[in-house]
Length: 214
Image (cartoon, rainbow, N blue to C red; front, side, top):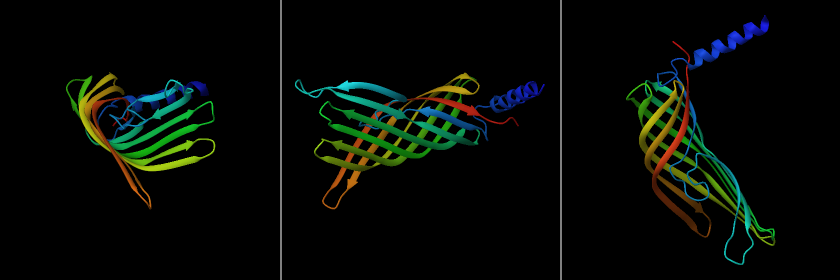
C-alpha cells in the first residue's frame, strides 16, 4: 500500500511539473546547446565525446586524441516568453604520440543568455537569443624533455534567431542562425597575445521546460 501511495505521489509531482510547462512566467528552462563557433579545438558541437588519431606529415607517427564537449544551460522565465539564464562551456582535447609527446587543452567558460519566444502555433515558436561568456583556455605541450604551458583569457559573444519545435509540451528542438565572436588573449611581462575569431553559423539545442501548475 505504501508503495502505491508513493508511486501516485511521484507521478502527481511529475505531472504538476510538466503540465503548463512551456514558456509561461515562473517556469524553468534546462537544456544542452551548441555554440555557433568558438574556434580552436572546441568547435561548435552540441555534445561530443570522441576518440581517434591525427597524423602530421607523411613521416610522422599518428597522435591519438580524445575530445569532449559539454555545453549545458539553465534559465528562468521572468515574464511570459522571456527567459534569462546561464550558459556553461566545457571543452577538453588531449593528444598523445608514440614518443611520449603530449598536447592537451581545456576550456571552461560561463555567462548569461537571454531568449525570447514568439508563438506561431502550439508546436512552433520563433526564438531570438543573445549570449556572452567569459572563461579560460589552458594549453599544455609536453615533449618529454621540455614542457610548455599557456593560459588564455576567453570571451565570446553572439546572437541569432530561429525556431523551437516542440516535440511534446515540455521538450523542444531548437535551431538558430546567427553570428558569434570569440577573443583569446594572454598578457605576459614580455608580450601580449590576442586572437579573434568571428563566424556565421547554426546553433542547435534541446530544451526542457518545467513549471508548477498555477
